[in-house]
Length: 557
Ligand SMILES: Cc1cc2nc3c(=O)[nH]c(=O)nc-3n(C[C@H](O)[C@H](O)[C@H](O)COP(=O)(O)OP(=O)(O)OC[C@H]3O[C@@H](n4cnc5c(N)ncnc54)[C@H](O)[C@@H]3O)c2cc1C
Image 1 (cartoon, protein in one colour):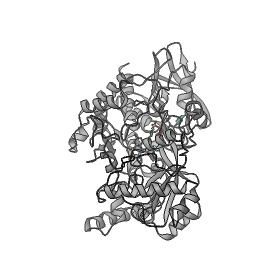
Image 2 (tube, helix red, strand yellow):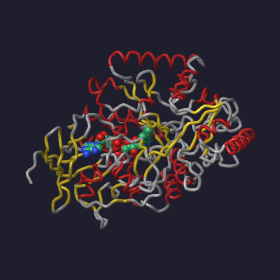
Image 3 (cartoon, helix red, strand yellow):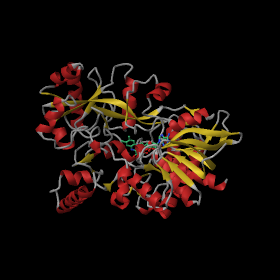
Image 4 (cartoon, rainbow, N blue to C red):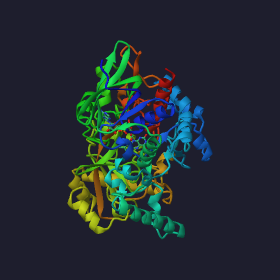
């Protein structure tokens, strides 16, 4: 084999998994090259909330919400039984060390919010805080001209021409005059944004996944880690003893690059690939994806061709959102509307089928599960005018005025009617049932107990509700016409099916043996949680920790 270039570690994909692996490899003194097929860093990571689920961290302890690894172990046992046991132990053991490693050596820094519950918060060992960490906001101006290289979040996650809004920013921006503190905070945000817009095409105060990507990218740049853009993995080069390197298209030049220690695949899984979705999720009626369009399964396909085993034994082959669709925008209903009081979801029979305040994945799974008996794709989110005023629905922001509402009604995103019977007719659901369903829900709202589905019944439900709403933060009557409906569909946020790996992220062949020189992290690796969505941050957490483990393994070999 004639090699055009040689490195120790060759990484494909500049999302969470790949950037972390490249950064740690450089800190371990390894000669690394990070190849990204587009001209921007970030992939799906840049559009995410940036949360990582890593039990027992020193960050959680420092921030006053300590978490115990033993509790997390019990929780995982309750959630996924004995599956992925070895990998799970490797994850639990390395998680805190990986976070400390990055915090000590780079700008990749996290904090533990005071409350951020696991999604099944009634399970033994669950945490209400301390396990889910969020990245600290990042000042994109530090990147100078390279700020343009950070993939922006999807447009609906920004306001005022490119201003990112974190969860904590929402109350101050909605009610700037509520207190002197709100006023100062809102004014600061707006002035900062106005100043940014003079120099940059969007606001440079980054939060959530964009902050995480900004921090990783800045750390890579500070450490002078070589990165190649427009650099696409074409195929892996296999020798008698494992993977020796890869064929890479860089710009319009094809190159063969030798990787002395190993190749790390971090190309983001295959959520947007219709072909691979058909192969692994074919029977499921899912037509939409929220993942970055460039995550087309390249790493997965290349590894498979080199003899890698696929782990497809998951409770669910992918993780989902319920999403509404507006033109090209697939808008995920994550936490801003479904759990709030005064909203229900109904199927084509006009009946509820799920606890609307459960996690997005559980909600979408319920759509898929119940769709067989009574069509619930799309399902309809139903609310009244006061709900939109207070919380917004999907793309329609809280406090939206008549003109905005009219615009969304005119283009069909929002359905509006003076009575529930008329609304039912418009959306094609059984009117009498819808009326009965709303009446029943309104009774539950008065008593505070949802006898049908338990909306607001867990700490996780309540976390996303409205604490000011009594007696149940997730229930209030739907009563003030006009009434509204938005259609939601299940969409893939990321794949669980992926390459089979061991506790050091080494890719396994069909005999269960590690393929020398080949590692997979992020969504190229089969989900550690085997298709159960246990809490916030369960794809980015493993991406970080297994990138660390993979590089530490390579550093030893
Ligand atoms: C709205 C939203 C919110 C989310 N929030 C969270 C959250 O808070 N916490 C969480 O854990 N998960 C979250 N997720 C899921 C999470 O974002 C993804 O699972 C995660 O970003 C995947 O990371 P990755 O490194 O595997 O891939 P990505 O971040 O997608 O990066 C993959 C990169 O590989 C590149 N690439 C592809 N093919 C090639 C090739 N052939 N050669 C070179 N490069 C290639 C791509 O261009 C891309 O830049 C969210 C997802 C969405 C859509």
